[in-house]
Amino acid sequence: MGKSAKAFKRPTKKQKEIKKTTKAQAALTPAADKERPSSMARTSSGGVSKSKSIRKKAKVASVMTRASKAKKRRMASEMNIAGLLVLTVLLFAVPGLAAPGVIDDIYDWVFSGAMLSEPRSSVAATSVGNIALFAGGRLQNGSYSDVVDIYNRKSKTWTVSRLSVARSEIGAGSVGNRYALFAGGFDASFKPMTLVDVFDAQTGQWSQIQLNTPRAAPRLLDLGSVAAVVGGLSGDLQYLSKAVDYVDANLTVHSTSLPSEYPQLGLPIFDSTSGIGLYTAGYQNSRPGERFNDFEPSNQTTIFAAASASLVAGPLFPYPRWGSGGAAANGMFVVGGGHMFGDGSSEPLTTVTDRADVFHAQTQQWGQALTLSVPRDYPLVQTVGDYVVFLAGTQATKALDIFDSRTGTFIVNPRHTPALYTLRDDAAAVTVDGCLLVVAGGTVYQGRNATASVEIFDACKS
Image: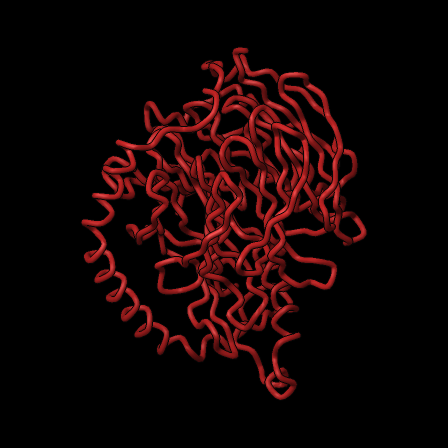
């Protein structure tokens, strides 16, 4: 935990997620079971209730057992990981046009603003070709949106389209440098969906395909010629899904599952240089399928290989916590920020961290931890050229934290620019052509109002 960690007592996004998924579980729990006290009941202050402490001693033994099992799994898969990464580096090539050059001096990045067609939060964002798409989300009145705002980097123009069904908690990604995918989500009845809206960037037309497993908030890994739709909220008593649906460039879907021991809602991070993706950190359900779920920060890591579309268990995430964010550049995967829960008496109820962990594709290991300039919770993180950029996730500064993958360090930035114009939460961010960073939507005034504000950081040379 960095020495600049601070107490932060307003409800976190993670607590809001647990509240939302509790509604889905309640609808599936027998009436007799609903009357029983849940071990994950929350107190009015947002902390874990005392009922959870009843299992504390038993949980210590359980954690030790899980650690032993995890060690065996790591040893068994070590050779597989090594062979997998070597094969990937030899075979992988990014399809489509090469990204334009990136302005190296961050002080020369050009800032501009725009507006979405309607204010909303929880927007799904992705890019394909030279366009950015911002789809769906939650309106100010709590209803869901079907609007898709589309920005063209070349023409610098905005157009508006629509999803086939209004929804929120959508997973977004792309495949084959042609198709933008908007997968799953909650419908108006709070039911997870199998629907995938597909936008063809070449024709401008929409189509639909179906996942094999319904999910809300699935994570998407863009693996070049294939996209992996990973995990998500399952809407059943397990809460979290281990399902993986691969979507190829022909929009064919085939399925597998995560090799991890527990279902996990993690971070999807892909690096085009090494050709591998990580699914790591986030949180897991350590008692899947039982009446009372046990959510805790996850140390599980899965490595996806783009060239072979295969996946294996990777080295454990070194500092599990809620609410971190991550991206990768040049074989360096940076996961930063997040928070830990305390008991609210001897330690703060919620402590936000400035810690950043780095996974090195070359060594297949997590390296020495680094430090953000300020603690950040649920930061937006994107790759811009050789940089991994952290923004938002704090009320302390509008400045960005920028990691330079060439030096393996964060840039010392006394000028505190580039910087956001508006502090916001629950926003969307995406990078177009590897050089244009776009931040859109979210909530302002500490979550009270949805915003249509868009902020653009242009680092493109052409």
